[in-house]
Length: 217
Image (cartoon, rainbow, N blue to C red; front, side, top):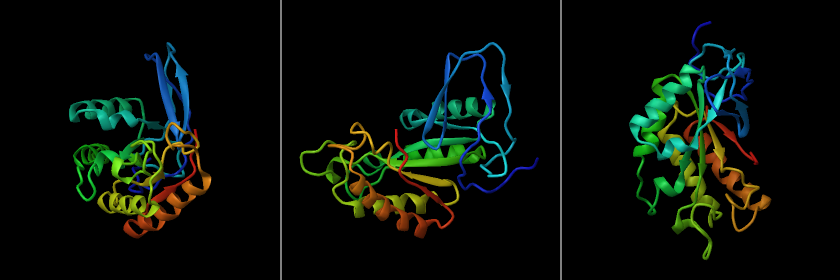
């Protein structure tokens, strides 16, 4: 089977048994399964460099990549590919990239995305984490809901413009039904405003990107 240049995100169908590990987290669009250690290994995946809806694919969610060094990122992605993983879900934290309003530090996200793209991997980016300057007064940074959905939408559009052709899909926030990630408490109406603000900005910057909303824990 030949490689596909289509980097759009499609839900993955997973058939994987892994050997030589204590546990492995296998994730497809927010759902995570722990696969226990086994002595034999069978991996049944299509040998494609990008996600394709006609094929079975395996995806890992690895938010820890954002906190790694370039060397560690390379090693982690290489290990994924050695197991047959061709799609990766990564964190694109607003609070980490735009720590001060209007000032951006793209270095880590650039390296992550480019490293995955250079390996032909499909990328799903989770845009989450509110900077302290963008939360409601009295609410914590990171988990606090954005005070302005429009500001979040602007950031999402900036991300999509930067990574057009490299990130195939964007997930709007992470587990917004959990106060640990969306405080002071889950707010379906407030979350819907985030989705409504981000969707047109992302699609305007990259019409081919898929926007994923409402992925809960």
